[in-house]
Image (cartoon, rainbow, N blue to C red; front, side, top):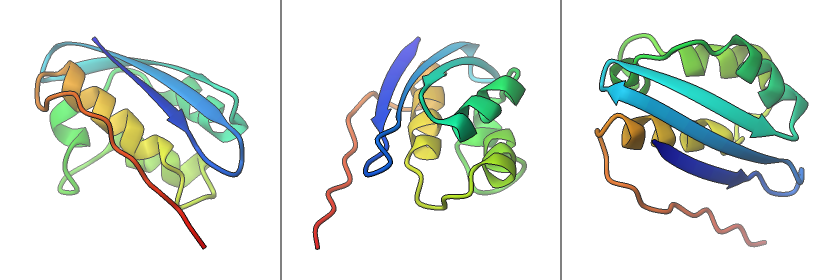
Length: 103
């Protein structure tokens, strides 16, 4: 299992992601979020194939759902979910990622 917490930024929304993958071919997610757009994505998720989600090649259910429900291209929740999926499936080591924004 992998856990990821995303604090999205100026919108103030937070998302907690739990990913459970018995192998590298299936992964179930539990999203606890304050964002109404991510709540819609969570309702439609189902079981994902980690190998399809960690690459820009091929079909990605996550990218399809974000395109459908999330109007904000810079939303950091998608990469947070992908990171949780790949760690849970044993396809990557856990490690924090950061985006630092200044003006």
